[in-house]
Amino acid sequence: MNDLKENTMNSLKGKTIFITGASRGIGEAIALRVASEGANVVIAAKSDIANAKLPGTIHSVAKAVDDAGGQGLAIKLDIRDDESIAIAMAQAAEHFGGIDVLVNNASAISLTDTHNTPMKRFDLMMGVNTRGTYACSQAALPYLAEAENPHILMLSPPLNMNAKWFKNHTAYTIAKYGMSMCVLGMAEEFKPKGIAVNALWPQTVIGTAALAMFKNMVNIENCRTPAIVADAACEIFKLDSKAHTGNFFSDEEILRQNGVNDFTQYAIDPTKPLQIDLFLD
Image (cartoon, rainbow, N blue to C red):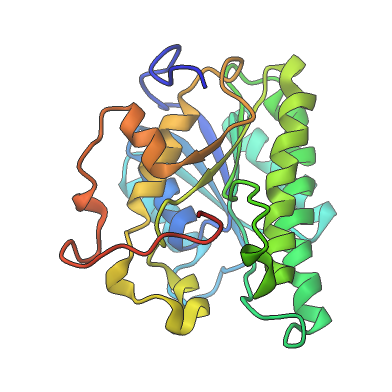
């Protein structure tokens, strides 16, 4: 791996970051982090009406982006709808004058075994995770090709073929690894265009609404906040896209390369041990 300190930008001011699934959780955290550097942020997600069980909408995040120093654009988007994706990309590019970064963050999760995974849920995970990532990346290509330092970032894990990561939730693993396989293929395919394609995955479980899917597997006090992933993503966007592509980064790895050695600020409860995330041995 190249030294991440080489060939980096100092700021994301004026850059346009298109984030799927950005109405809450890690997507929202990335939106607010890049907004603090003056970025334009497209908040693309399905949640446009407040829900008591799942706080956060595209509109509330867009306002928070504005308050944080960026410019927010809320777009209601279901990434399973190809026509809607094309319209959203065009709207974002017209509004901000282009797209510099695509973050494929939207994800569907069900940690269920084969017997307990209805095909409707299988199709949802494949449609959102693998197909949605592919479709958004494809639709963003014409705009990214015109950008000065274009990046595509998947929130997906390294491809770990240890059978233990399949046996309890084969469907979810297949769908999530589909995103990671997009990194492998697209990084090489888009290299001549100078478009970087990388993956980012948290070293430890992140305390978000998705934590409910882990049920008795992990407690909130054993997690970190989404801020660690957001800080790491921000550093990736500053890398020279021609020199850094096809990588499967962890949040800790990125931040250590940028001089961070104390991660207690990210712990929900610094006194508790941290739970290593899925797909990491």
